[in-house]
Amino acid sequence: MSSYGNPTMTEHTKVDFGAERVDGETASTPGPTVLEKAAPRSERMASNKIECNACPVLCQISEGRTGACDRYANAQGRLIRVDPVVFLSRAAASSDTGESSTNATVAFGASSEAHDSAQAEEALFVTGVGASSTYPDYKPAPFIVASKLGDVDMITVVTEGIFSYCSFKVKIDTDRFLGPEQSNVRCQGEIVGHVTTAEYGSQMLSLGGVHHLTGGSKKEGRVTCDMMLALGNKQAVELSIDGGANLVIRAGAAPIVDGVEEQRMRVGCGSATIGIFAKQWFGHADEVVVVDDHITGVLTEHQAGRCLGMTRSGVKIRGRKSTPGRYFQVANPGTGWGGTDIQDPLAIVEGFDPAVAKPGMRLLMVSTTGEHAQWYELDQHLVPRIAAMPDAVRRTVERIGENCEPSLATVLFLGGAGGSLRAGATENPVLLTRAIKQKLVNVTCGGAPAYVWPGGGITVMVDVSRMPDRSFGTVPTPAIVAPIEFTMTYGAYRDLGGHLDAVRSLESVLANGPEHTEGAPLARRTLARHADNPWPPAMPPMLG
Image 1 (cartoon, one colour):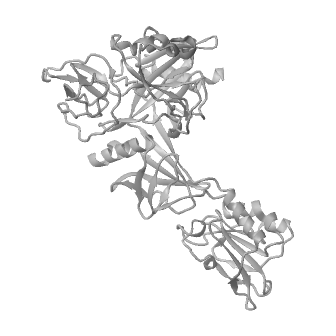
Image 2 (tube, one colour):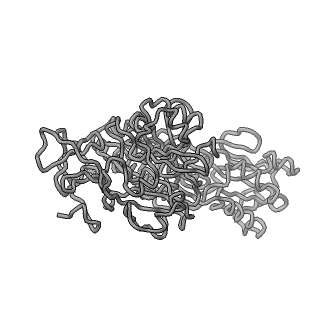
């Protein structure tokens, strides 16, 4: 059996659970070992096992095996953290992922001139990735690190939080119809979220959440947790929407809708497209109809056409007229032209007013991405006939496409930082909450800037693409494990009743690891910061 003290270890084995078995297992990529605290004993536990109290599951772990989360293991009677602690380097990122080109794991206390220098210490930031959690809640956070920001004494409280109350908000750049609002989103047949309100140029999903993690069947909870883990760790996830599309989404990558990879986010709704390009169409077309599921635009009726002095074409558009040149509900939602269900754009045209329209009139019909476009000329019976598109008009269609941003799936982690996180910082948790709202404390997740929602509690939201790879883990309760860091001045930490006796210098952390490791060496992984993230990663707003 592999020894967890051996850095060449390549596989984990699972463990018997505690007295109350928790169904389901989650795997993580094997990594370097990190020695943790000595484990407590239980009267009901076999002598060759130790109890892990890193989460409420309280796994009883045999020698050489890991707990159910695959994050902790029994190495010769001691509880170890399998994954290394992630440090961020001030050096600019070498890739879009923010990972350094030399992601070597360096053991704490290893001899290295670069790592021993004061300059190197100032250019390092310890994240919550691999830092361990604070369960049971009375313990101080695994790392409470003192550092300098210029002449200012700073404190960073670092931990991995166990989040039952958390979700992912997914923004999918497409005008395709993904499914009716409020429809269930499924993974492996289990309901894991729902379609929420569409935003400008994007469809939105809300995935995960406490009700799917803990409020349904055991299978629903396991599937939801695994789906969330994959999304947070920037892996592809297959989803299906009731009454809608099948999706493959991955943070920072183009979404795949019903087997087709999306290319373009629409330039705007049909009305907006008219407003943008009206002057460029003027003189080259007698009428332009921009087909859109939400607001279809008609150039000569639109205020833009009127300002240019264009004459009404007499085109009659199906749907509900809103304001001049703007039509709602011209077709059903779908994956065709402009996010509608039509393949022939003339399906939304009822005809032309013979009192206004004239033979030879030139008509462009185009979608909001420019992916669909057709040029027509009216015959003597005022019937549109397909004709060769003039070069000047074709260039405007190409410019629509040029102005469309690449279609991406954006994944935002949204979590409520509850009592266990706050208790790791202070014995009076409400003072931490108040200090954050007063902008005395900055919150980051894996060094990535987090948005803190107004109102009560500490509800944070962060773009997972700006976090280090493999930032998320799970425990089989089920819940998500995510890094979080609170940074403030020493004075602010003192005033909110922080655990001052647990504060240690960055130099001490680099040499010895967390306070409760009794000086045993730990492993760490140093990554270059993400190029889009500020440095220092956690400067409080009052110092910004």
